[in-house]
Image 1 (tube, rainbow, N blue to C red):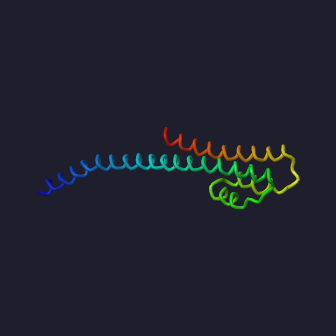
Image 2 (image 1 turned 90 degrees about the vertical axis):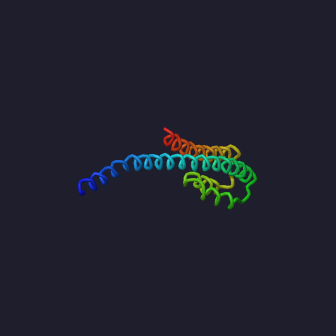
Image 3 (image 1 turned 135 degrees about the vertical axis):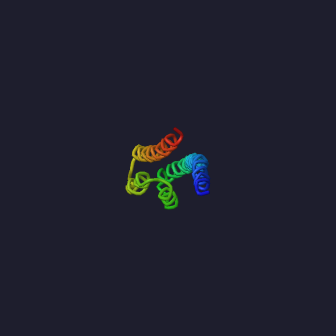
Length: 127
């Protein structure tokens, strides 16, 4: 009787290994797909917001207006390299148009670098 019981227990363990392995693999696949979906959504959101921030900042810096709301939005969604351009380089009010255009291009470049890094992260997950 004990040998039969031991056989049933060992057989059950062996049978459950396949189910556990399949469940674990499905979980890993789901987790990866979920990360990709979240990154896709974040990238689309960043692209929309980046366009708005660049256009707004362009209008504001060319007109010399104040723009605290856009700095706050950028600080929430973008890295320090982007907000540093918004906060530090705009301090000088006597800039030439060319200087202002350089700052706007720097801002656009930093935002694009950040978005590209997110896209590379997504590509790594897809491989």
